[in-house]
Amino acid sequence: MLKRFIAYYRPHLPLFAADMAASLLIALLGMVYPVMTNRMLNDYIPHRSYRAIVAAGIFVFLIYTARMLLRYFVQYQGHMVGTFMQAQMRRELFDHLEALPFSFFDDHETGAIMTRMTNDLFEVSELAHHGPENLLSGSIMIVLSFLYLCSINVWLTLLIFTCVPLLVAVSLPLRRRMRSAFQERRKSNAVINASLESSITGVRVTKAFTNAAVEKEKFEVGNQMYVEACASSYRAMAAFHSSTTYITELFNVVILLAGGLFLYGGHINFGEYSTFIVSVNLFINPVRTLIEFMEQWQNGATGFRRFIEIMDVPEESDAPDARELEEVQGDIELRDVCFSYTSGEGREVLDHVSLKVSKGQTTALVGPSGGGKTTVCHLLPRFYPLAEGKGSILIDGQDIRHVTMQSLRRHIGIVQQDVFLFAGSIRDNIRYGSVNAEEEAVIKAAKKANLHEFVMSLPDGYDTQIGERGIRLSGGQKQRISIARVFLKDPAILILDEATSALDNTTEMLIQQSLDALCKGRTTLVVAHRLSTIRGADQIAVVTEGYITEYGSHEELMAKGGLYKELYDLQFRDRR
Figure 1 (cartoon, helix red, strand yellow):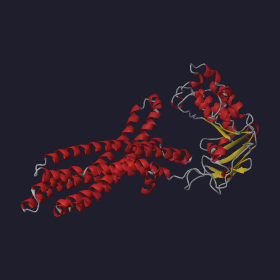
Figure 2 (spheres, rainbow, N blue to C red):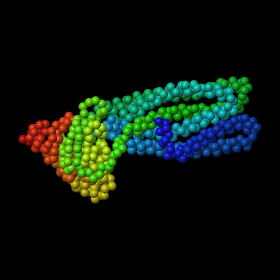
Figure 3 (cartoon, one colour):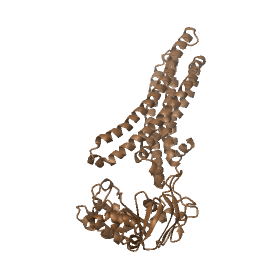
Figure 4 (cartoon, rainbow, N blue to C red):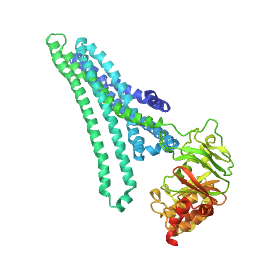
């Protein structure tokens, strides 16, 4: 893990090296004051050297001015190194998330992912800046202070340093306990963010059902978990700090007692004793700095560990022999397809399903919920991989395992029941179908989707901001935008997954006209519960519990008197 973390410094080495050099100079210049104090007490003052005293004061003033400028550089540019690294990690994490399979997002909540990208990476950036700086300056100051204190009195210095093994013995077990506690706090923070994201996203549903109390209760569960995790981490941190600080303060007891005895015994003079008391902070302060580094390390290392947990999740990948899928005609074939969302034992969602859809045909998938209809729609664009030995899916005779996912998905358009629109303008959301499309093409697509007149009735037209997930639009308006962007994409294959099931009858009729226009000349798979919308399909497959149990045209299936006829009669019983 450490090697991976250090690698992020590589693009910023010049700035990082300058930051470390400035930190080193700050540490070295910190030696000037005790040295000058020693000279003052043992030389300049006893010899009444007025010029030397004034020169020493001016020299120390200049040194402190230089340290101030160096500290400014370290605080500003050093933090920028951490910020650059954080931005790089965040960029890599976002790119990686975009390349992860659907299954990852099935198992991870959005709020928890966001916590890793924001809170965790902020702690990593703090470690990236302060960690090396504190470790370098603290280590060097301990060595220099040891040598300098030895120059005053070796035995007194060695007595002070005997406290160091005690400090290490106490800090190591407390450090392990603190690391575990901070890890739990990170997890609880992710839980509360996930709960918050869910509650805010669903606030309109909450208000509609007057369930604010329920959401508060759910939020409080995560909130209390966070409080308990914080209490545990702060308890561990308090034990660590109080114990280590207590031991560093014992250094003062050793100096006071041992130094007094040394002075009493004539082993040192008063000037040396005074200098030793002033100079011992050269040792105590870097010890405290290294103790602070322990806390920074726990925070940053925990955040980085959670970062690489996601980065180590395998991305979607093409087969080594994958080729571009070009000039798609639209013939689709499922051959003996078996599929399950979980790798363990259990019933297959699709069990030896075979189906052929010829170029330009419309095939409807109907049947009870949970039968496997939407799964077919997920497998065709390879949102979920079909394992070897579990059948195959072919487009124009090519196994989709052996074509690139980019080229495969480029030729497939999807209109779903749950339309997702991005915050932005109507134009931006239509252009999502082809991000470089000209304005004329956007308007043409909107007209085909029966959307243009509505857009032009708005004060800002295509620049109208639609709000988060299109909250300012009706269901039918959002659906027409989704249809327009598929028109703009112009795919050879079209998937309509319950595209009108959430709409009222009047809006459904208008949307259906747009969908009918969209389907012309394209191979279309339609998943529908409203059987009135698929009567004109070229073929209908009834999918039940992972099997295709019936297959044929509307008339053929009605004549068979099977499940399709039963479902159809059930839907239209009130019209007879």
